[in-house]
Image 1 (cartoon, one colour):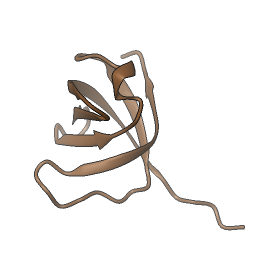
Image 2 (cartoon, one colour):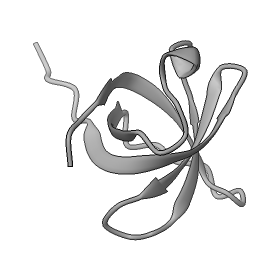
Image 3 (cartoon, one colour):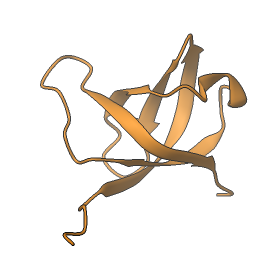
Length: 74
């Protein structure tokens, strides 16, 4: 059984939208649009950890689909 490689990053929530979060990656300072059914669970200013498949669109801003997203303390 192959293990699925994923990518994880921490970010600050800039904006909450319907099924989407606009976040700023804490390490790269890049703005990323995150697709997640759990968007309504978060608020602007929250620090979150996002796990995704590693696939990111080349759009501006880049987009990912979260496999897992959770609030973290700074």
